[in-house]
Length: 297
Image 1 (tube, rainbow, N blue to C red):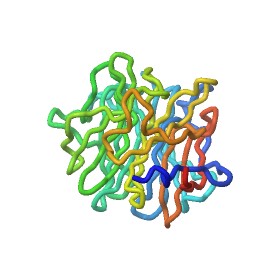
Image 2: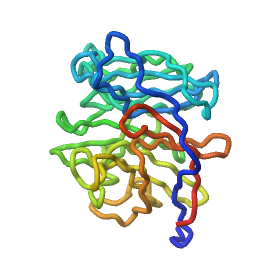
Image 3: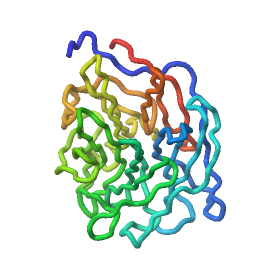
């Protein structure tokens, strides 16, 4: 990669709001907040968004999934569709422990990856709207974990050259890092490797969250978006790393760091040759979208 012509992401124009704090009915609380979310296009071409909502009245860890829908990605104020999923202890999930949904389409089917407070889990759908859990041989929803107290969460899947790369957060012994496992079929996954940790982003339990990886073929490069707390305030920022290796974005160094974006939970979407970035609204009151462009550093 020619470092002199390296591209970096840049937010273009104004943000528009696509969702606010949802009405959860009898689960409503004054402290609830939408957090990590996924956006995808369903089989009927409508756009779907599902978010983890924390501090709700659902019991246990207090988290559940809520869904919105829109006809166009550029629509404002998407239509609320109601509570999407709650944790089910019958499948080994922690009550109220659902975290960070992410959906990928593969061969006309949809796969949702999410956390249950301990494991990364998976669900399946034909239409991209109604999902059923995919269970392991023990009839549990957990695919894998970095350990019982490692808070394995925030999964994201990238397809590249007949292989899937599943990035996620793990916090064993209170040291946060971005991990990755690979698969050829979305069901059987390799052992994990750490792909990003430390550096200016830190190594604390909240210092490596909300991973998203975007491949730019014209650059032959992979871009990792990693959320970390700002050192100057209580807000979060997203550090962006650029590497030619999807399994190495720097461990305990900043050699691949290219820029920082003032957003939390960055989700990159390419639709009709236009890039977009979705993120949380500051204060965790909803979600927003803006156009994204790539410029020379």
